[in-house]
Image (cartoon, rainbow, N blue to C red; front, side, top):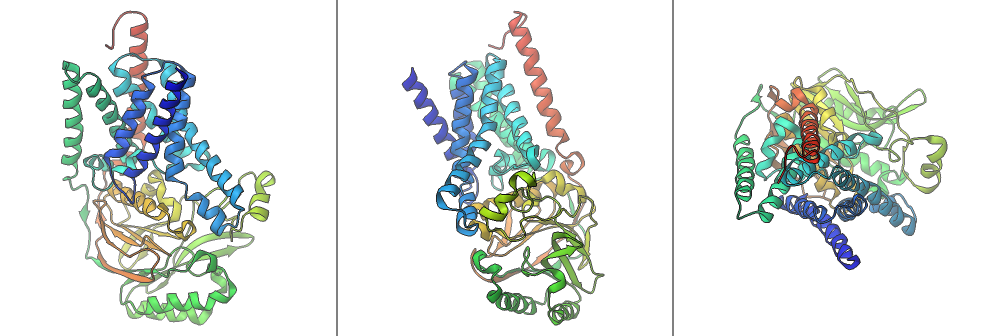
Amino acid sequence: MNVLRINYFVLAALGGAFAVAGFAPWNIYPMPVLSLALLFWLWGQTASPRASAWLGFAFGLGMFGAGVGWIYVALHDYGNMPMVLALFTTLLFAAFLALFPALVGYLQAKISLPGWMRQTLLLPALWVAVELLRGYLFTGFPWLAMGYAQVPGSPLAGYAPILGVYGVSLVAAISAGLLVMFVQQRWSARGKLAATMLLVLWLGGAALRMVEWTVPEGAPVKVSLLQGNIAQDEKFEEGRLVGTLETYRRLALGSDARLIVFPETAVPLLRGEMPENYADILREHARRNDGDILIGAFEQERNLYYNSMFSLGVSPAQAYRKNHMVPFGEFIPLRPLFGWLINEVLNIPMGDLASGGAQQPLLNLAGQRIAMNICYEDVFGEEIIRALPQATLLLNVSNDAWYGDSSAAMQHNQIAQMRALETGRMMLRATNTGVTSVIGSDGRVLQMLPQHEEGVLTAQVQGYAGATPYVRWGNAAVMGLVLAMLVLAWSRRIRASTGEGSNE
């Protein structure tokens, strides 16, 4: 029996690792559904809450170990953390994230709902409830939520404008449960019902993909997104500063676009320290184009420092300051306890920044109303929609150079694709080393620069008006669905335990 259990744990860990193939850059979207179906089946083989929790932990360790192992690159290669400590920290982070699937395993065994209702009702609801918890707890880390793997090619992506990424996760998890039900009872009426429901869910998603939730507004605008390709370990070197400024000056002056966008903190200086003649040259160039330039730099106000984007050009000067900060990367939680980590172990410039605040005005530039977000902020769909439906464009600037040649940048771009789908807006991304891209309102990448190469991505970009259901409801709709499913599951458990009904 112990050998069998070990085999189950190995299977769970492998299933979690294979689930990562559904995410960018591989985009094999059925894989997470199949992996989740395997986990659901494994949970069905044990009634022990403890064993079920360990199975969930093994799955999570496989998924997050394979999916966010790029944390090591940031810690060791660019943060200068010793190799052994960086490996241990990366493993510890993956183990922490694995606690969330472990919680699902424990709770589903505790509730112990018998029959097909467990596979298609309880397990999907618990999975998404815990994904939501992960997306909010300790400022949130919703990376590798199952719904992201369905963008852009899966039929299930059609549910994104209605229920958002967590809604897509829910449909994927229900699909996994139906798949288990079909395999276990394929020759019975219930097995045929599972196959029919699975077909309806996927065909329904495909039909929803054809719905136009928003409409074009105004004329297209020409935009240039700059990718300077400045290596992270050189970015803040004093001797590299002149070369960095010259690179971005040259790229900007070579464009005749109405909106030119620098990446996040492209100018490795405080805004007030930027050479005055440098700003004047860029401002005059933007005015000749009858447009604006957005520049990424740090800002200082009194004793506070901000990660900022500010504009120069024909429009009145405007700025956006990053609101949702990355713990330990951009601010130090519980400073008396963890301050030493940034100051003594990691080499992270400007590692303790202030938040710009949740309520900031849209940027009115080049005839567009722009919902600005910086780097990690586009991971939070519920925050992006605060600027909607007023905004006509979404714009993200990032610096994923911290993660080298890993899959992190492509995963980040896939997340941005989900934001475009949820909102029915085009998403523009200007990054230091990639992925710099133009994403259509249907979530598909229209243009993209090669990673780790200097370049300018120029495109005609269309603004959109209107509101998808997700813009109106946010995560409230999927939360309501999950709650209703859990209440129904609990009521079925009570009926089954009192003999009033059966789920078989």
